[in-house]
Image (cartoon, rainbow, N blue to C red; front, side):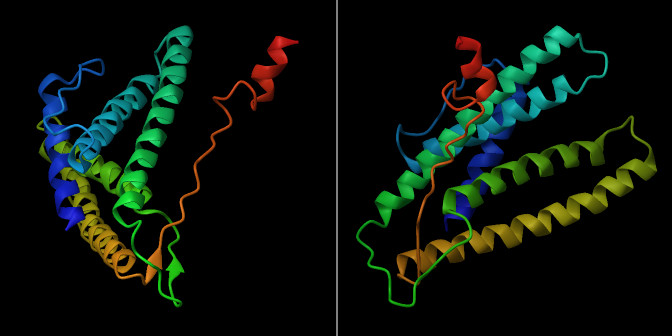
Length: 201
């Protein structure tokens, strides 16, 4: 099942990243180029780096100029993250291009890759919540509360994993079909963001 593969690769990417714990650490992707495994590993590495960028920018003592620099970097990273989701959806569109949807086929509320995107973020939440459960400097009450949250996250991962697998089985059987809308983010596009295109006047 795809979810089992994705969860395994996400955990591997998170653990690999935390060997260095460096936002600028070069990615050494262990999987074959253009394979689904390669895309999943890269996707989660991008998410993991962005997770830590978000931590940095929330430091209340950060210099405002430095904070703005990090915010712009996060915006750029978010665009990369979105592009990766679309690459993964392209993989599934190619994989199921020969499937003819049944007359009763319905479209899903989100594409497979956007569901996998949520699974990647969930893997990060689980990893960092586990860190809080195990943190020696935390109070017993803090660790107990985090353990309750961790159990919810683990249940959520099981439910989401099952839903992704069921969606892909339905697509393969023609019971559902993919229809991917590209995100068309406007804020990074100098031709669509009025603040940016008005600078040229």
